[in-house]
Length: 238
Image 1 (cartoon, one colour):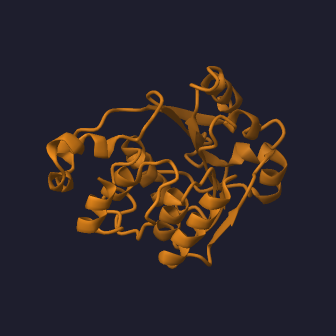
Image 2: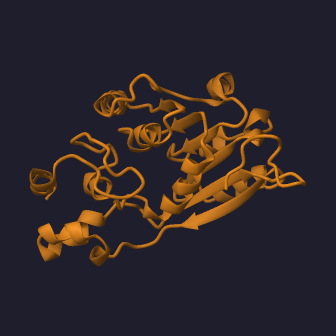
């Protein structure tokens, strides 16, 4: 199914916030077609629109996989430096290749592990963090150890199927300093994606399957606005 779709439509993302991005022939999460179609994590598209309008100059992506977000954000935020991390050397290579394919390799730095100490060395106030680290978010996002987190905005995939305390823990850590929106996973309707008409009817829903173990939740965590409408003197998200 992947081969047939790519043969007809090529390796360019067709929709969503990163439409037009030249892609690689393998997605590390095993969900190539949702990314090419532009349906991948569609629940986040409205939030990503707000992120793009905010104009961050530093983006840190922990758990970058093949670079869908790291490179996608680099393309849409031409003034931003992107720091991308993944434990898998293959994912690191694919992310670097994706950055080259899209002409943003000079602004995307790809590295391996990122723990609290490493994050503390790199994190400036006002940065945007995108975190998808398969349950390690509970260990990484510790504002009591890394106070700069209190002056940043975050989008975090919450892997409660690995640890049922992750969401409550993350929310409690940031509730005093941030506004927190929990975004619940939803289904996909093939009729909303006309490009799927090129596939056999039995394959159209499969093409949108992101292979989740259960419906996921994300936390969009933004600094509370100070009196007068400004967010601690840092750029606010509108």
